[in-house]
Length: 248
Ligand SMILES: Cc1cc2nc3c(=O)[nH]c(=O)nc-3n(C[C@H](O)[C@H](O)[C@H](O)COP(=O)(O)O)c2cc1C
Image (tube, rainbow, N blue to C red):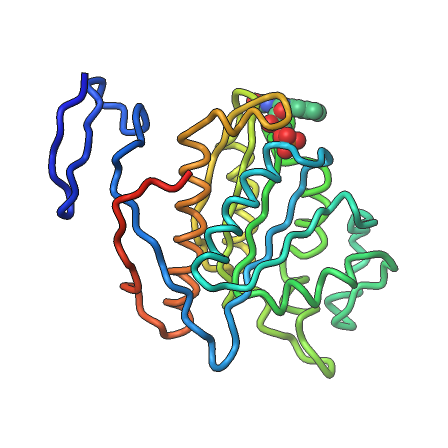
């Protein structure tokens, strides 16, 4: 049984259980507007660390990007499984020479990372942590490596100090928060601006679509990314237009 209350001018149905996700229908939803950065659109890059195409991580990441695009951002989706990324070999060349000596596809990805205003990294939960594909990327860009490699002419660069980072985790059952801690630890160590996270549940490919709360979190993360990027670039916070339609 539902009763109704008014929130921000909308009549909202309240589930009797008190579970805020028990029935998302009728929840007030805000939409956001992506401000221009100078004369260009903001860029949000989605990086998928699942080896499974059209899996739960991809579905959630695409929802985040869809919301960013609806707000007016430019988006790109990148599958790590399509790239050859080798493990960091701890040679420390990046510290001495401001570049990575390993010849692989990281060099195709790095320019995309530096060009993005926001990056959402999505990983399936594997062994209560992130997937191997995700871990390989984090080790290669983590620590001070990012600041060194983003520099030019032998100088250290800004790394990720102006990058808004979002995390998407798709779990079969348990370990989402442990996997999230790997991402948020890396964001913190490398001085990213932490944008938020979305957690989805489902084991089989596509099952996350049945997780209404997970998909709602993904949509909300898209809005949060846009708001944070606006904020970082001097656009302020309140660029919201409220609607009363639930978007899932
Ligand atoms: C190698 C492997 C390890 C996994 N470990 C976990 C785990 O620790 N906890 C969990 O809840 N699900 C685990 N799962 C299930 C996945 O997290 C789940 O199927 C997820 O939705 C996969 O996302 P994807 O469809 O994007 O690949 C594991 C799956 C695989 C293949």
